[in-house]
Length: 373
Ligand SMILES: Cc1ncc(COP(=O)(O)O)c(C=O)c1O
Image 1 (cartoon, rainbow, N blue to C red):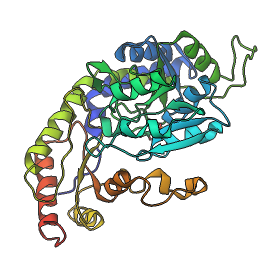
Image 2 (cartoon, rainbow, N blue to C red; image 1 turned 30 degrees about the vertical axis):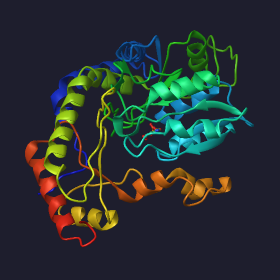
Image 3 (spheres, rainbow, N blue to C red; image 1 turned 90 degrees about the vertical axis):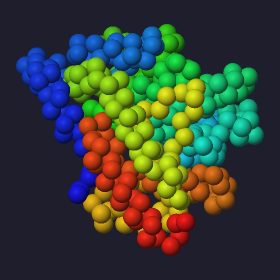
């Protein structure tokens, strides 16, 4: 059997009519940039996150970059982030001229460890970016209380956590600004690049509205030096259609995760995900831990199972950040998880047979590996 890492073909089939009609209408009207459908989607997404504003942009990376721009973060400032995340979380800090300050993760949730925050806060610290990795919110109570104590802004990187909740509140509206990606493989994915910034703050909203659109207020009046980073109307139509089903798809992902855990929980050597009681996980990624991971990965590929690693190298060890002078051993938990983590196929319309095949394959591959006990 061949099981792809992600297959959205059934998802598209289930909403094809709705999307096709919406797209035809945009093609006929020609309102490709900031059309009314884009505004409608922003309102829908703001409502979904229980936030006052949502501002569509080009990508999750831009959402983070513009969020930092709205906070006037620039050269000489420092921004704290987990070292175990997708590199875009760090790049957006670098684009502003500020310095990324890495922190290790909690072994249980793979999210930033709040207990390590205070030791890196300085007078230069302007923001913390907690990442809700794989779809499970970070420990926001502790992060927020430290941030408030030191008067530091919180920019949530919710690029992997559309619809996840923490103490019943949606990600994106837990801090000062929330950032989402609509990259096609995300649980709410566009048919190309896209992203959105969410906030309850009037001034931040106004600034991001300008920053994403050449800094303008009025057609040819430019108040600040902005960028060109808008969500296309075509993508907004796709996202509006998909948003209606997001909760249902997140439930399907949770059911798959529960079945995976049931089948893998007692298998020697395999570590299954932990979900904390005060939050919901949306399982954009279902990742297990295994010893001798690279061998296991090859074994899974040979059995026709699409597996990936999120992420094999923590950012402090990436060549792109060698200038910061950090070395192996600086963030031991993240480094260990990077060596052991393995993402299994996960998409809403996968079926039980596929999950059973993935688990049977993993058990076989592990059983034949002398390093897995
Ligand atoms: C945690 C995280 N941050 C940022 C991004 C960047 O989003 P995008 O690819 O839309 O620029 C992604 C997704 O790729 C992500 O997973």
